[in-house]
Amino acid sequence: MTTARSQIDPRGPRFTAAVTLAVFAVVLLAAPAPLGIALLAVQTVFFAIGAGRGVQHTPTAYVFRKLIRPRLAAPDHLEDPEPPRFAQSVGLVFAAVALVG
Image 1: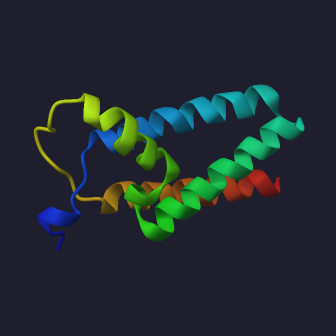
Image 2: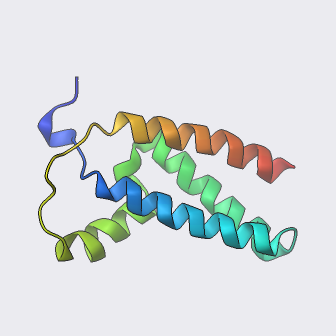
């Protein structure tokens, strides 16, 4: 069971998803150039952090927490961090396969 203390602002994972989308768009446009491979590797590391330590510990979560969250009103509700963590695990698997490919 998740405690209120460990719950997350649902806008954080949405911000992370938007950043991930932008990174993957650049990867698709740049591949197979070194820039595309490097960005894919960075995103794979971000997924590994999110899957291993939790979405609240990723670099994009840090950016959200320090730069974006202070400019927003309080969230209407908080969410369990486990579903986004599972999504990070799925992303890790696909990104790792893509990186190997």
